[in-house]
Structure formats: structure tokens, C-alpha cells
Image (cartoon, rainbow, N blue to C red; front, side):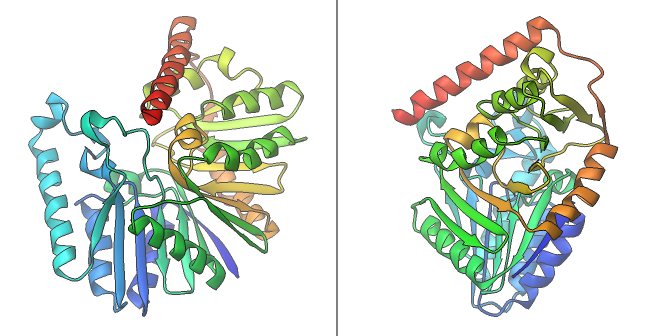
Amino acid sequence: MRLELLMDAAEFWPRAEADIRAARERVFVQALSFEGDDAGRRLALALVASPARDRRVLVDEFSRHVVSDRFLYWPSALLDPELRREVRSTGEMIEALRWCGVPLRFTSPVGPLFLHSPRRNHKKLVLVDERVAYVGGINFSDHNFAWRDLMLRVESASAATFLAQDFEKTWEGRTTAAACDLPGLELMALDGHGNEERFERLLALIDGARRSLYVECAYLTAPFLERFTAAARRGVRVTLVTPERNNWGLVGDLLSWPPATGGMDVRHYAGRMTHMKALLADDTTLVLGSANFDLWSYHFQAEYLALVTDPVIIADFRSRVMAAGLAGSRPLAAPAGSLRGAFARLALQALECGARKLCRA
């Protein structure tokens, strides 16, 4: 087995494209967003050019309602001709793929009045033959390709088989929770229904940290945020890197409010969005994948988690990924005031409560 960290689309896409074009048996792709812009078209062209006999794409229904990170039914979006052109381009790209023998299915319908919207299939996957898989946080759209992010390339027949089985189940309209243990790597597939049990492994990792926790995440919320602050109170060095301009304003306000992050070294990544989901505990265990450390992944979303203990990969994460995160960020300079911070916490608690009621209905 061989593992490799790929930082940003600039490292991920050339490797994935080469693997897709060299495939012989199958290429399975799964994402939350797949849009008819340059990034999406590059994937589509690679799929059409691939000689693999079985080429399939799964996209969450989110991508039918949110394009370029904008909800399509806001008045400003309805009146934006450039955005409407991209929506049409996406539809035309999907139809062209199907015409070329690459079927695409949408997963997780949002339901009437978006009542099922909390339950998204948030997985990101590129799977090629029985030999290589990519898991992590990158979607196929220009704005996602521009963000700071991370993918894990896994060369392993066992990992490929495990992920192919999970993809096939999702293709058939069902998601299941499962895990695959490999040397230096544990892969977990979360089904969006029993996630809390699977995340106990991660929460125990945070609770058991003795020296340091490095976390880079845009959307750090309950129950993870409280566990990180508890670790800081008992003397663990906890560093959080989060975007300076968060596309979830409520979460940005919460993470800029010292009472919510007490004891943590909060750093704002400047210049561009960081969409990374990475946690390094005591320099011995690295957690990455599609799952954010937030209330949505914890309760509602189908996700992939990878727990890496391979010392070579951890050393690479520290020397390249973590070093770049620290170099590109700066200490919190403008803390949120009490009103904004308290409102953000109450609003997120209300959203969590409302989403859980919707999902039980």
C-alpha cells in the first residue's frame, strides 16, 4: 500500500486526471458539487477519454440548488446572467456525459420545501480500477479548485474494493456505515444516520491528547469545539486555523469570539478560503477526509473519514501542509464582540435543533 498527501487542486487534479485516463476497468467519481465550469469540464473530458468500461458519477442534489457557492433561488442569483449560464452549462455537460456513456445520478433528494436538506451525501471520491482511490475535501468546481484543501491518494486493492462497495450501495440508493483497517490507515464510511457512534473514535482522540492538537477547519462547531476547548483547559496546545473570510458567517463569528474558543490559539488563514478538514493529534494520528468537524457532519451527512498513523505521511503533513497553514495564517486580530458571538452560538444551536427535528419527521 502507498499513501500520498496532495495539497490543493494543483497537486490533486493532475494525478487524478492521469489515473482516470489510464483506467482500464472502472472509474467511479463522487462529489457534493459538480459544475459546468472549467474544473467540472476537465473532469468530464477525462471521463469521456478514459478507456474504462465502467465510468459512473454520483453527485449530491445540493449541486442542483447551489452553484458557485450561491443558492440559486435568491433574487440576486435569479437575476445574475453569468450564474444562469453556468447552470445551463452544467445541465448540458451532464447530458453530454450521459450521451457519451458516462451515467450520472443525483443522490439524497432535498424533498418538498427542502425538508431533507440537512441530510447531504458529502463524500468526495475518485476511484480507479482495483488500484487507486482519492478521498478528501475537493469538489469539482472552479471555486473549490481555488480553495486550500487536501486529498489523500491511496494505492491499495483492499481500499479500492472497500470504497467501490460503498459507491455501489450509494448508486443503488442506500448508504451504510462501514470501516476498513489497513496498515497505517483506517477508512470509515459514515451513512448520515449513525454518525455519532463512529465519531466517538475522533472525540476520544481529542479527549486523549496530551501534548498538541492542530486542526484546520472552516466550520468547527459542536460537539468538537467544546472538546478542543476542554483540551486547551487541561494544558494541551490547541491550534485552530480557520478562514479569515468564512463563507458561513455565523461560524466565522463564533470562531472569532474568545468565550467560545477559550484557551485555543485561533489563527485566520488569509488571502483565500481554506476548505481543509484536517486534525493532527500529538503528532501521531492524522484525521482527514470529507467530514468537517461540525454539527452537520456529526449528525446528518454521509462522509468519508481517514485516520492515518503512517509516520511518513504524518511527517509530510507537518512539513508541508501544517507549515503552509501556519505560514499563511495570522493570530486573531479582531475578536467578535459579545453580541455577535452570543448570537452566532444561539443561532447555530437553533439550526442544529431544527435540523434534528426535520430529520426525525
